[in-house]
Each structure stands twice: as structure tokens, then as C-alpha cells.
Amino acid sequence: MFRAKKFRAGLFALSALALLWLAIACQSAAPEPAPQAEATAPPAAAPAAVSATAAPAAPAAPQQAQAEPSPTAPAFRAAATVAPTARPAQAAEQMGEIKVDTLVIAVDPSAGETNLPWAGTVDHHQQMDLVMEVLVDIDAEQNIWVPQLATGWELSEDGTQWTFQLVEGVQFHNDWGEFTAHDVLHSARMMAQDDSILAYANDWRTIDLEVSQAVSDHELQLQLKNPNPDFLFYIAPSGGGVIMSKAFWDAEGLDGYQEDMIGTGPYRFTGRELGVNVTYEKLPDRHWRLNGEGSNPPEVDWPFVDLRWISEPATRNAGLLGGEIHLTELTRELADIAVTNHGMKVIQSNFPGNQLWGVFEGTYSLNEAPGIASDWSVQWMYPDLPATDIRVREAANRAIDKDLLIDTLFSGRVTISPVGGFYPNLPGWDPTWLERYDELYGYDPERARELLAEAGYTEDDGPDQKLMVMNIFGFPESPDLMQAIGVMMADVGFEVTYEEWQFNTFVAERRTKKENTLGMWVVPPSYKTVYAQLSLFNRSGSAGHFYETEELDELFFRLSNSADLDERAMIQNEMGDIIFEEYAYIPLFYIFIEFVANPEIIDTWEFPGSDGANYGHFDLIRACRTADPCY
Image 1: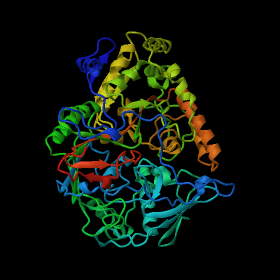
Image 2: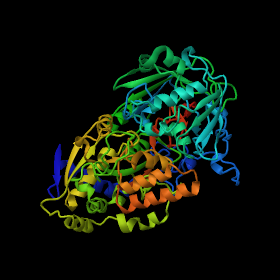
Image 3: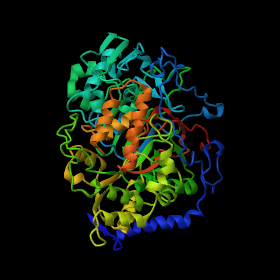
């Protein structure tokens, strides 16, 4: 641990701030990345293509395919029959051979290295993306719910019963039999079991498994305990809805699940080395929806895939430039250098994948067990923490120069997100939040110092604030961002300390609300429906428990018992107002997921960014089959 105090900042913190100012000084010399649509193979000294350079003003979340609403058939009740987006056939010049047999992808270690889908946060499902499938997928190009193992679905008038029709004839790997409705019920039971630590375990427990039933092998009714028009979020990869084999469980149990990963996807699991990688091989026979003549999307390209865990962006960068890695996450600074100086290219998610918020640990309720609501006899579990004072939370927000962070660490490729958990195109959004953002959250260090004085702190005795520094998947700027924020907070009077963590260790520790996790960190929640955000982060008894109050709890109870879409939007808006006006978080940015690819090996990769793991659809990574690089 090390300390940076007001103007006596340590070398570590000062160097972070110096890097920011250096980036600004160099900014005028940096090339502007070209939009992907206009990109051609660049000359040797020119940068390769970067996709879109900034998040859109109104990002789109996955939505259920909807029929025209009518008094008897509300929009959320329409059966989904939309097919995945048609993708153009490969041009003749693209039909050469692939250049490597094994595709190597390097990412930050996930929050859990395991074959068990319920044994970690949803981000760890990136390990299962090639092997396991879901009932409902997220279309990579339209960001809407589309069928995968389900062929269609319908929601009852009261919002409590989902009926799914299922694909017939799909086989599990290694001769574990045909996929049926019984596998779906089994998977739901696994996600909801008592020892599940999946972030959405409480939401999976809202399925009444005593009443839910397999109508036949290929028709399923899921009965919910409460109405939820947003439940497709959980069934899709965004909520961790991977389907497991009941026959494999019945025969091999937990030991079998820990040793092997059995699914219906285009690849099968071949092994893992803890802390190093996970490996896969393409199925030898035609996959039920891929690998066949006329299939759409087309056949997966690589016989083998190697998913490697590498924490340091610099190490991943070295592997990419050395040809050992073909696709990886880098900071935007390193990505731009790889593009400009080494002929690499950036592949960006089609939609914003993360929403960055600063979170004050400890501003949650005193509840004894997950899933059990608080009695609110005590407002805060740790009432002596400085961040339980709204003036301290506002001061932290006023201390941070968001424009500086956008222009430097993020190379201008993010936009402001005014309220954690809300998006411009989803129910509950209030456009005045953006209009009022500068007034309530704008950079104002003098006002920050005044607020700390009003809260009883002095120049020599500011509020203690520990900042958690760690590498986080999908968000490679995390350590640099925390150090920069620390310098800014120290400048207005916070007594800042930094503590380094491994992300998976921190997630495990904070789940039990241990005192050693009482710091501030920037969490990058993946794109979610608003209901899913509020359920995970703003109600007592949740797994997320970020900011919880009695008023938010009461509103969420009303939300979770309403099937009326207008009422749900109104309640979500009211909860958003509270989060916004009480400075519950430090709301920062909407951010795309960016990967850097070797264009000699990789042509394209269409992925939405709104998968629960922030990236998936690995089967859509297309190989470069031309003699020249695929820019």
C-alpha cells in the first residue's frame, strides 16, 4: 500500500498525472483513427482502420423482437421469430486457406477460472462461449434478442409465464444425448442453487421450479414468482443463460462438471491450465447451426482456439507484435501505437459494452444473507465511512476532470454516462440528466474543497479514501484510471491510498462485505436492461449491493411486482432520479469493447458488446484468407 496526500503526492501518483498531461501535449500529433467503413489497406507508414471513434449518443440495448402492439397483444408478449442477421457470403478473393490452425486470443483473467457456469460472475462465461449455447442469443449486428436453442417464445398477459419452443435434434458433445426442455430446467436449477455465486443467482431464483414444466421434450414453460417482461436478459448470454446437460450431471455429477465442459456449441472443451489458458477444438462433424453448406453464419474457421489469460497489457502487446497472439485487448494508447507503427487494426464492439462508474464500497445495507431484504434498522452497514455523507460523494465527483480523462486515457473514444445503470433508449431514461450533468457533476475542485469543509474535514485532515487498483477484463485502462482519479481526489483534500488487487480475489472478498474491500473502484458493468442493473446493484439482499437505501428498496419491490410497462418505466425513472441526485456513484463513461487484431490472420469479428462477458460470439471471428492483410 502507498499513500498520496493532497499536494504531497507520491511519485507513483504524480507519474500517473504526468502521463495524462504528456498525452494532452502529444495529442495534436496523434493521427485521427479512420472510420471502419472508409478503411482500405494502408500504406506502410499509415494507420490501419479503427472502428467508430466514439460511443453513440443513444446506445441500443438488446430488445425482444416485437410485433405491432395491440390492446390484446402487448409488445412484450410477441413471440420472437426473427432470424439472425443475414451476413454476406465471402467474396471469391476471400476463399483462400486460413494461415494458422490455432487462433490465439489473449485477455485479462476472468473473475473465475472454472468449468462451472454458476461459480463466478457472468464475465467468466467467456470461457464457455464456444462450447455452450443459450435459448436466446443477442444478434451481433442488430442487438436484438434472436432464437438460438429456442425457436420462439411468448409471455403471458400477467408477465409471469414464459413459454419457449425448442430446436429439435440438437446433440450434446461426446454422445451425451439430445438437448430437450429437461436440460433447460436442469440449467435453471444449477444457476439458482444455494451455493451459486453467479451475479444473477437471485434473479434465477425467481423461477418457480416447482411449477415450471417441460410440456414436451421441445416445449417449456417457465413460471416466475413475480412478473418480469425483461426476463429474456437472463435467458440470453447477457444473464448467463448457458444450457448444461442433465444426462451428464446425472451420470457424473459435480466431479464430471468440474473436469469437462459439455455443451451444444461448435467447439468442444479440450483442457485448461490454471492461470494460463483454456483450449478448444472444432467439432469433427457438422454443427447443428454451423459448418454446413448454406449455413448462416458460415463455418467456423479455426480447427483450434487457445484462450490465454495474460494480466498485463504490455505483455499482451508484445505477444501480438511478435505474432504469438492474434487478437487481444490493449489500452487505447497501446492500440493506437500498434495500429500506427505496426500495421495492426482495431476491432470494436458494434454497441457500447461497458458503463464505467466509480463505486464507494460500504454504502449498502446491513443484511445478514444474500436474498434476504434488510429490515433497515440501520441505514448503512459501515456508517462511519466518509462516503456515507452525500457531501463527500459530491466532492469526489467534483474533483474529477472527466474531459481530461476522455481526451487522454480513452483517446476521445468514450462519451459521458450521467447515471449508472441507465441508457438513453431504455425505459426509465430522463434526458434532463445529461442537461443537468455539468451543474451537479461538473469538474469544480474549489467546490469540492468547500464540500469537504462543510462535512467537517480540514486541509490537514481530509477523508480517508482507499482506491482499489486492478486489471479488469474488457477495461484495460482500469489501473491507470484509478491512479489518475486518486491524484485528482488528493488535490482537493482526500487522504488517498492505493491498494493493488487481483480482480477475481476482490470479487470473492467483496461478496461477503468484508472490511478489507471498503475502498473505491471503477466497476465496468456490462450493458444490461435497467431492471437487471437495479436488481443487481440497488436492492438489499442482492449480490452486487453497491448503493442501497430503504427508499430504493421500496421502489424496487413495486417494480418487481408490476407487469405494466408504463408503470415499470416510471418506477425505474424515479429510482434513477434518486441515484443521480444522491451522488450514489461517480458516473463516468459509456465505452465500447476494443480488441486489436493481426490483419494477416483475422478479417472481421462481429460482436455486440452487450454479452454478459462483454464479448462473445467468438465463432464469428473470420479468418483473413488473402495474401495481403485484411484491412
